Amino acid sequence: MQQLSAHSPLRAAPTAAVLCAAAVAAAAAVMAWVAVRRALLTPLRRIPGPALSSFTNVPMHYHIARGKFHDYLERLHAQYGEVVRIGHNQVSVADPAELRRILASHEFRKGAHYEQGVMMSPSTFSCIDPELNKKRRRQLGPAYALSALRGLEATIVEHGAQALMAAWDERIRAALEAGDGARAEVNYFHGFHGVAVDVIGVLGFGRSFGLTQGADAGIVDAMRKHVTLVALSARVPVVGTRRWLFPRLHAARDRVVGVARGAIGLRRQEMAARGEKQRRDILQRLIDARDPETGEALHGPALTIEVLLMMIAGTDTTSNTMTYTLMHLLHHPAVLARLQRDIRQAFPDASAAIRYDEARERVPLLTAVILEAMRLHPAVNGYQPRTVPAGGAVLRGRYAVPARTDICVAIGAANRNARVWERPLQFDPGRFLGPDGEARRKDMLSFSSGVRMCLGRNLAMIELHTVLANVLRRYALALPAAAPYGPHRPSTRPGAAGQPEHIPGSSFITFGPDCPHQNCVVEISLAG
Image (tube, rainbow, N blue to C red; front, side, top):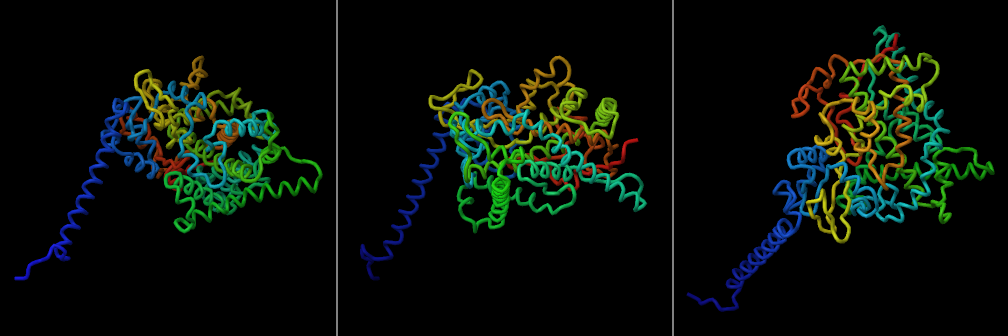
């Protein structure tokens, strides 16, 4: 038999296989060592949490991608406490006092996650740099000040509450003409969303989008796809730079950016033609905005992104809060009856629109109901990281956290913290009434807190109060017999037993109800 030489290919093949196997084994050993070092050779090992999360961030990313990260965090905090390790370099905090400390200053900066999803320019919401954020807030703060918005309240009511009631009145008239009686079914999620979009359209784009009058809702679909693109690119940055990966999402982004740029361009043309400014809406205030310290204005992409942020942040958040507020009222008929009675007694003249200050002063229960709905269902309830500064930090006086660790601001879990809130899963507006009601608001973090508190909170509260007050005065409301959620469907969750099961929701930056076309239907008739 022929001898194989040392240089024969038949001898080289096993040698290559051995080398390949050795390389794979070495790589696996390195990866295992890195995983062990991340999990165990860090002060984070003392923080409770799932064992798997000490080695990898995969479970966290999985729940973020599903839009159920808020549910995941709530379960973890219920099991492990107010500080939980959710990744090899990720910690979640659900202690309101600790979160207020973290949010009080720019010491804990927003994580890199925020700017990875930015397409044109950092916005007031997404920017990481504290100095840029301070400058933007100096520039934009006056546009969202309550004093400025009070001058726009008549417009807000006209294109908000009054436009919605006109549309719903038409539905009742159509039912009567069809012989179906004086009661009609409407989708309150779609109605509230149309109101929010139309109000922002008038204030921020110079025109109503006409959604409450039945106009094409394509702009809403484009906004949602844009938000999806931002969320995806925040997790996988290449998504934001490779159009071919998600061409429809990029086309939607082009549309909403074009709408924002078009509104700015048209307003500048109007200003040039008239020779003087004729409007004092939010769009005009953004165009006129100047940094009081430097005189610097917003230009180009910076102005466009702030107008775009107003469109997106000012619609989903407000409309979803209205949706969950009405859901809770429908699920608790006694509270609904009491609130409607209070509103009708305080405002018997149905021909006069109810204004924001009047609603707050004369019907404190309305504010309490809104706050309780916001506590249970914060409009922004997803992954909101803050980065631990150089030198590290200590959480709750016992957990050392090294620098560059991401701290997730678990607003939803904090709002349902059993140590802070009695019966945290129950809808109880009374917790915001009485002598302690005002003090309790500091623990409700739905508008965030500190230096990054939501700029649009005043506009949101005006819309919430005026739309809900006027709608609740005008209509009798009831769930349809076939409603999938309501008092007839009690929850079986620990701590919520006997309470009506909520409409489930998902969070992709903003939080909203699942399947609203079937879950958010109400029967309406004119109040007697």
